[in-house]
Length: 192
Image 1 (cartoon, helix red, strand yellow):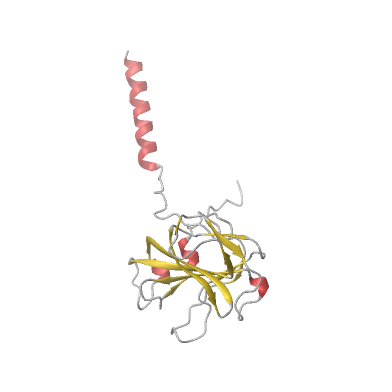
Image 2 (cartoon, helix red, strand yellow):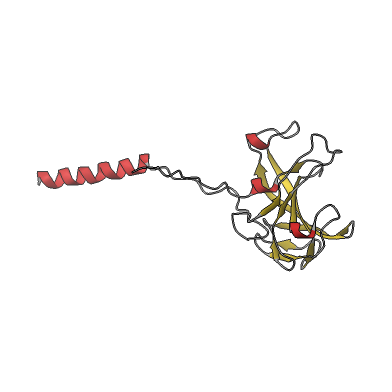
């Protein structure tokens, strides 16, 4: 009987050890997907985000994700279609998202404090739309297909231009890649 109690105590101790020493990562607060892969990874990046120091200066206010014309484009998150149309001859779809985005230290600016939560509008260009303005869409839903001719500054091979702006002013741009889950990096030892 004494050995039986010892065994139960040992099992209990092991369970407590596992419970307290094995970290459980919390689920991602907001599930966003890449518009070209419909998954947590963006796929190929043709041109990275480059925010100018002032809004009136030139820069690259989004990322160009590699994709061929005709590729289905997915909504990065749930929201309402804010705009469907052409700007400077390029077909564009914009979506307003209700779910707040927390600004991390690496993405804080003079106007956006680290830790603040903002709502955003994502833009997709050039996209031949399958949605209408005011339509409610869900994360991952196909909003259109990649068109053949991006804006004048973007080469046709650059694929999808994906942008993100802070609402309601639309004058603060964010790198849309911050919406995707941060990949877990695990280092492997070189020797056993």
